[in-house]
Image 1: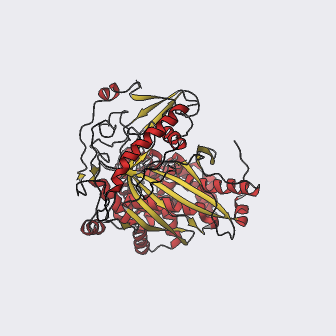
Image 2: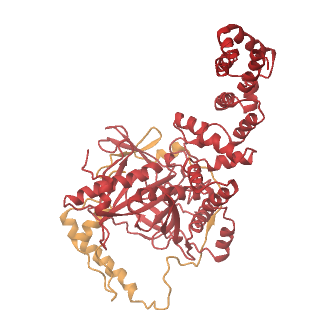
Image 3: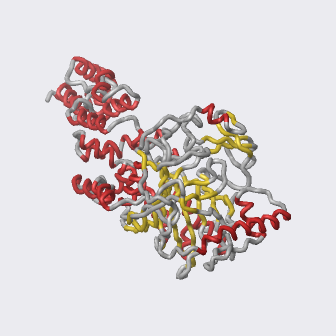
Length: 499
Length: 109
């Protein structure tokens, strides 16, 4: 299904993009939103349900205090106004993954409104206005059987797991973001990245996009340059990674421009993002306006956070990512660009941890942005998913600094750490990786190298001192890289040149 | 819904289209004949309920609860769940520990 696309740069000569984001975050509470069922991820299907989250007759919901507090804290971190009066509402629709026939959500009285989040792209700051932050519950999960694997189309039937149904879900809705132009896709990504980091810092959720604890719907529209009216928007779902957020906006801009160029009009619809092709395809049609018949939830009393409660939560907020970045940049004496690299590599936390464990900021950065970034890349995992801790990296760095290992041996020690053989010092011990001092073993290797290459020795003695490199190489090879090259060179010079 | 409640207190008139829309939302198959019958019946119900709109509530604040309670919350503590066998026993069909439902048509996710 290939649709006509306009080159990205051409889109911008004729159109202005407007984007908007709706982000759903599953809160990391122990229990569900309105009942005491556990929220642990990955349990056997339908083992985490009860009459409340199954919507059985006669059951009554009671809101989870921690979820309410987390929502208020997220609102506070986004500079929102916290409502002094807020209610839950029923959003009525039928779908097999909602057992009650409605989702308990919030409608016209959300907990938090009117906030903002500043994001930086290529040194420019863009303000993303937050329309609202509200609290609701998650749905169950459908598994489609028959037809193409896992696809709803052509499926014979579906199987439903309600473990996730009722897990507290916070929805964060931005106001339309206009004026970002060519940077719109990156602004969208930067927004979700920053939001994710804030929520992580608050400890409100593990915000793992691949596990679905952070999900994003991306709205995109185009308006002719200079137009006062915005175009019709599409809503792209199934955007499951930060990179996809950017790609989804980019694709929709290019697709919509092609439709508009051809004299067509954009249909307001939900579209699905496809990770493999980076394209979107039409999903649920909105020809019939959705009618959720919202009404205030009669089974739950209103939330009325008083000033004292809100102030207490505000006072307990941790240092937020933007403030932390500014502080660390200052402490480590980095340029804005260096800091941006560190942040983009997702290495800020681990570098901070490594510095805290005793490494110099320069060494910590070198390890994480160099060798470890390479390993993560090779393994296709996030830097922070490598099985090595900042403390172990600091230990590795110390082993190099004290001369116990050289860079090459340190990398071998890292192999051992990543293979689960223990801490660096233990790996150096068990694998015998410490550099050889002027031991008998090294002296013997040097003597063998000299005896084995009389021609080289003659050259060196004849004045071609750089030929010594061949002998150094031979010794390093014989000792399998365990010798310190400078030591080897000195020993060779002493013997060959008699100095 | 296309109907709105008139301020006068009279019941809103329900047309066949409104009934058809409501039936669709409720996933009810309603015949043409039933549309007419239900429009009349629902109209009578609305008329009856509309009587409350004659009450003078000028100085009464709107509420959804009769009791002035707020912030009824529970501590975030996990409590035992139902055994899965019991949960699925109530389902018309189950498979692999999951509720089995007919194929979902017309919508994607």
